[in-house]
Image 1 (tube, rainbow, N blue to C red):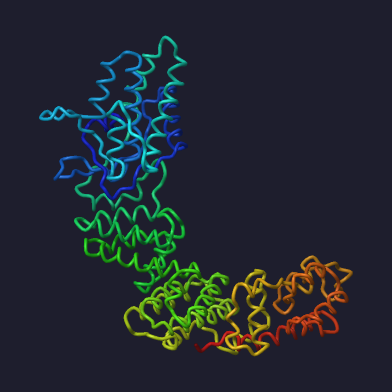
Image 2 (image 1 turned 120 degrees about the vertical axis):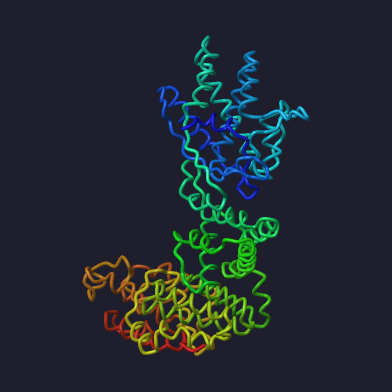
Length: 554
């Protein structure tokens, strides 16, 4: 295995323009130096620094770095710092030797130094000036600042170490030179082409900050883009801009997974996402098409994450209702339907988009109560429906009902399970009770509960979560938990009432509930005693309302 310095000096390297910019922060650079220092002090001849994945660019004659640019760039910075240290101590010959062997080669025709390592288009000019010229430039981009910080940190660490050697400082610098050049070993893996390199790319990022799925996918698309790189790059940046996140963000990976599921009709697990896309996107045309899909999908996905997104205003008369339903899906934590919604928002009419959002709220609540939401069967059904929408087989919410009938609980099943349902998430319980209150008052579309309305009241557990045994003798201590979170035991109260009712006994709570302006809360307050029979009765009534509040048919 060659030393890292030997590898750097053995060829002229380039980083593909699609590779990410310099990414190592100070903590990673410090770990890099400390690891080298420890190995040097221990006289470790077999210190291993990981792998470099390389291929030869036939056009430029340079060796392309598929994986390992962060290590080689940091090593170049270290060699530049080492050269400076020798020059400061009056050893110009050593400084020049390092410069010529590791940092630059001389163009014989122009007598101009040519960098041995070329970084991507954002970093190259700054990096070359920084390691080759005495007057170093000021950073413009964040990656420039990271390069500058890395060099300053390496310089400070090297100075501190060498200063401890006093009269033997020159020998210590030579030891550093020999160690980095020969003993800090790497494995170089040279493959025929960049396409071959990507087969092993994701498993060989052995050191430093691991690449995310977003990083690897960007590299893959840019590699295949060829002469159409600018268009693919623009689409990629527009997708990130629409979502207002970076490629490293977990939400971006979720979007990638939902977008792929939406267009292919089959769910893909996060761990399989990159490999699945890599196996299908293998040409310039496919890279361009996929970039366009991401750009279009990101805007719609951003709307699903924010009710203030401009997309909703485009729905005209149904905009407010559509926003409300989108908010409800967020409050309920329902994400499995997003692949379907990406297709619906792109291909349905404005009116049908709103109807579908309403239907998905109802179907989602039914699924939460009966069970199955979040399971593989539901996710697969939504994915297949999304593909049917994109293929033109379904163009309405009613058509979706026909496709999704197997996973949408029927009225009798929904009512039966609602009558025994528990809910320990306050946000969901508050939404359910608010919608049921609207159904009790015979309001149209009772499931439409704006956030402001749901948050205007507090949630009260009539049998308290911290009930005193002497106050609630109808419930044994070992069975309270199973009854406390029954929906029939939960009501909405104005904030003033809730602030003092709290853990009080039934005799105190009863009159406060009975005088409430909320119909379901008042109904609970009419119970003579609050026991299991009273909870069952309250919840059975709520179950009949639930069928009306969240209808099965759009």
